[in-house]
Length: 533
Image 1 (cartoon, rainbow, N blue to C red):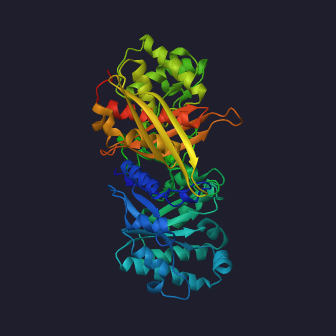
Image 2 (cartoon, rainbow, N blue to C red):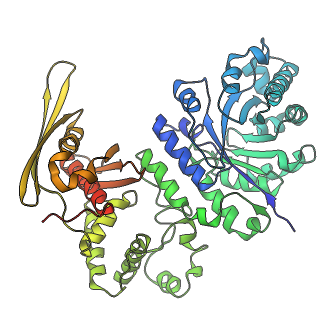
Image 3 (tube, one colour):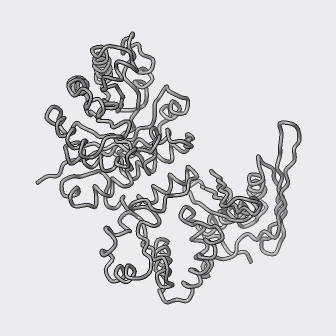
């Protein structure tokens, strides 16, 4: 028996951008798009070309994706003009995409009140829009906005809207639970009815999470016949969010009730990058990852003492519904020293560090990690700093740049001009080198002081010349006069390698300095630079 194909449609770059407090930059969108393409997403909705400068620029110079199909979003034509003369449709039509997904009204209440047009005119808008894009050889998808509410209100008209787009040649008809109020049993009943008129291979589901049922509604729609699922990474989206693909994808791949019936484009090998993909998005947004997220959360496979620990040690299946490594996560036994060692050993294995589980250095590393995490360090999003810490304690990292002291000052030159200056004293092979620089802020100045004088640092200059800081984030861990600051720095080089380092201190400059030095040391270690004599 051959399996049916399920398609995953990611809307993080559009629906996710509507999340309160989320503002993607162009660089952010490109990073996320690249990660999702690497994961194996079928469709990636990049945004709405023509609606704003950011999305327009994104489509003008689209990222290079693998097999993922970049899709432009928009809405059906406005009344009172032809599809060919609608500026909004023109911007979408001219985007560098093979596929488009346009939203249209299917709830008679919205047609009457929001659009203020006749039901017949709304059908004409859908028809003419679909015809325009299909004639231009674009893969056309119709997002049936508020479909489930519309079907409950007027099933005949809601279905007529769907059939209008489908009969014109739409590849996908996507049923949207736009206000997130529909429950799983209702989704199942309604999708089953729709499959009697439109084949399931042409139906999709777009669920919002206002009743915490978006994932359940999406899976129920698949069981009832839909073959495309739309959602976002980590469930981003306005109000309560959208269907969380980080929960949906492993369920489809790893649970027999779905995996034996359906194929998706994401392999089990790529599934092992799912946790990293989820945490990358949080890192980009400078958000703390949800420890209790299904599959990828730091606590998803965490076990406390007592009977649970005893049972899971003998047979992990007792309290783990999947192998944590299948989604790139790790088991975490929370309390005992032995369990803590297991966690550390798992992290070391990730970096290819082989060590006997009874080596006393493991306990030293465990104690150091606990002390640092108590002080405010969090290594979930700073793998480079954790790897450095582990290798230093295991005696695998030589001493590189030694900065004996540094000085940072900020001066207000005029009403609108504030400059920062930094001086660093660096010792290389017994010689002191004084490096100075300025920048937009203390961290930028300190970074420039070291890297703009890279030729001064002798044997290390060739290794650091292509180093670049691409992002800098600050998080205040507690409030008051004794607040602790955590700084995260993302770095890259000409090889396109990106790594994250972290620093913690009551002083923001000192925290930044620690993260910056880790970035330099990590680059030197990876380049196999010689030790500082």
